[in-house]
Amino acid sequence: MNDRNLASGFDLEAMLPPENVRANIAVNTWQESGDAVGQLLVDSEKVEQRYVEQMKQNVEEIGPYIVVAPGMALFHARPEDGVLEPCLALITLEKPVDFGHPENDPVDIVIAFGAENKESHIPALMKLAEQLGNSKVIGRVRNAKTDAELYDAFLCLTEDCFTSES
Image (cartoon, rainbow, N blue to C red; front, side, top):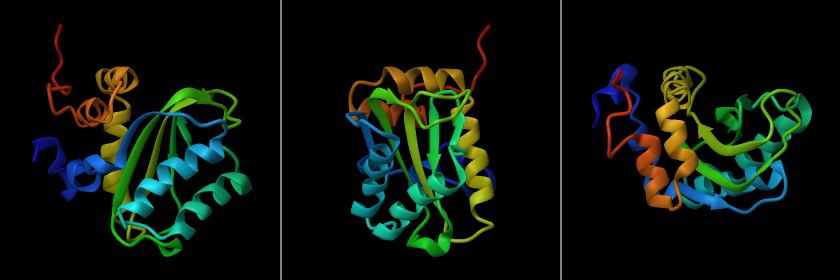
């Protein structure tokens, strides 16, 4: 386990197994991107199918609030909507899609997140923000061609993405 994952008891590697990472997925709409990333969580038995439906329903009801940064969306719903275990899934899109966000569209990095309770998600989101705010990480994520490259890029397994070099 990397030292950066020890903070607040949150371990990215434990929540994001390699089978929950897919590179260059072909979708045509934001809804299809939600289905694709959500299905990884269903297939790994971390959430129920109804959780995926609720993630998309939230966007339909509230708007594209899940587009948290340029080109990045973070699907989620409430724990009671079907989370079985804390989890993450990550996909990159073959071609970016619009979510309807006025500033951060189009999206090419899509994450799904599930927390078991309303408190545990806060340290998890802080660690995700750290990853997503790191230009080295995002550059490597966007350049990843295979699932394995994407997994390594997001978790910074093959290089230290958190040291500053001048």
